[in-house]
Image (cartoon, rainbow, N blue to C red; front, top):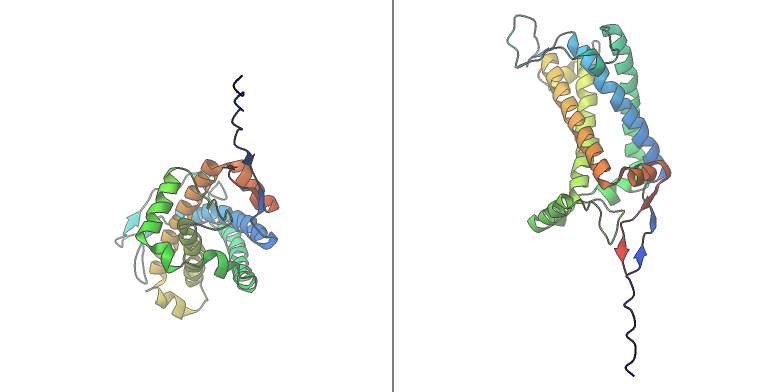
Length: 242
């Protein structure tokens, strides 16, 4: 009698939990998210007071503007009704939250080496082959390295570093340049208060784009897993057959 063929075992699926985000990173993320979600709509209400942008030191109704937009609707602003004073109160308070939060993030990130370890962009990351490989992985909705799921890919590094080291400092510096009574040299550094206002608006648009792309990728990557990781620190790694 021929020996009975043994069934081929099904591949075993392992889904391991990885501690991906430290406590301070999670706190900073949610405080930062709250600040930005208040700063953008309150900034739009301030913009509604004069929805025209200029370059240079001066700009008024009869000066040529490089950008003129219709006023933003109430559902997109804080407050929802026209209140320049109210919007400034919201905006300035959460600007302080954003600024001091960034300072704390920089200090702690340097101490625990989060910045050097996770956000450092190496020469190999920018090689054409590496960029193409990461792009193909993104198009296939594979956002994490199977060997080290805690590691950031190059697109995450570029976007996070751009926000932390470029966009947020630019928003803070240009916002300070707009504040009456602050250092006049800071406004001159931007080429005038109107130029600082234009730069502030452009940086805000860049931050808004980042938020939209970030939320879209969170949804595509699995919102429950991603949000749980940012709440508890623990993230479930992708399935690996073994």
